[in-house]
Amino acid sequence: MTERVLIGGLSVAKVLHDFIVREVLAGTGISEWALWTRLDRLIHDMAPRNRALLAKRDELQARIDAWHLARKGQTIDLAAYKAFLTEIGYLVPEGRDFTVDTDNVVEETSHIAGPQLVVPVTNARYALNAANARWGSLYNALYGIDAISEEGGATRGSGYNPVRGEKT
Image 1: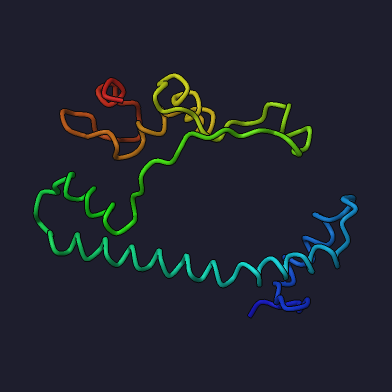
Image 2: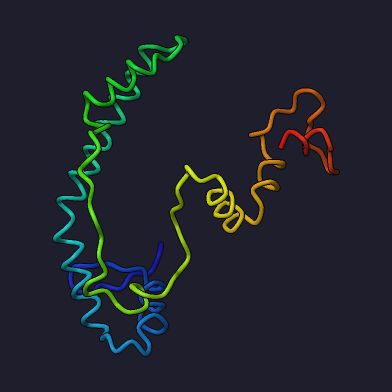
């Protein structure tokens, strides 16, 4: 069993506690007491909402599972499926346009470019560059997995297969 440290209303794995105290907080100016007190309050304040959201997720998943089971072996009617997902609240109408500003955001976040986590899929070059930056090479990733059909001699193996390479 994992050794625990009791801090206020929290029971924290000792290894995590020690890492946070010795390495994460070191040099930040944030006291151990301030961190654990605020985290305790945050977790306990948000727990009821989190439980409600998890229950909603379980309810939606159960309804989606039941929908699919009732139609097992049938071709999916995408219009009917979308209507069902909308009816149960899984899909919602797109919201109004909005803007985001950088008021009250630290300098590093508001003015210094950082890694982009989201790219527009409507721009193939951006999407490919993002995939390559994260996975080394999208080509290499696709070549090695079953996303590319092995039909027509495009089998995976220990060496390079030019037929598979062309399909990729």
